[in-house]
Length: 88
Image (cartoon, rainbow, N blue to C red; front, side, top):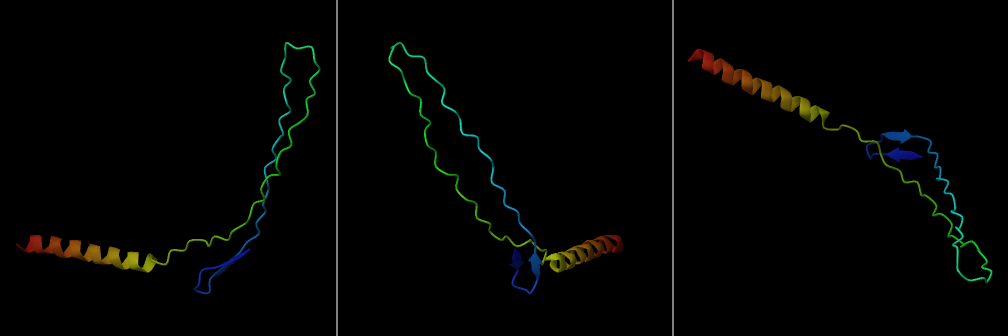
């Protein structure tokens, strides 16, 4: 499976889809008061739905540069306020 984030970053991986194994319950005989024989026939069940694989792109941090600029700006503002208090 290959995913593209639109900025020429591609990620390729192998996906193995495994369906769960579901046990079919066997019918439990119910005791009856009648003497007539009762045949127990298993109830047919529908086949399990098949799973469809969908590609989900891996999240990338495209905002890390913005976060760095924001942190540096915040530190400069704190430094300027601290230095103004020392001058007074």
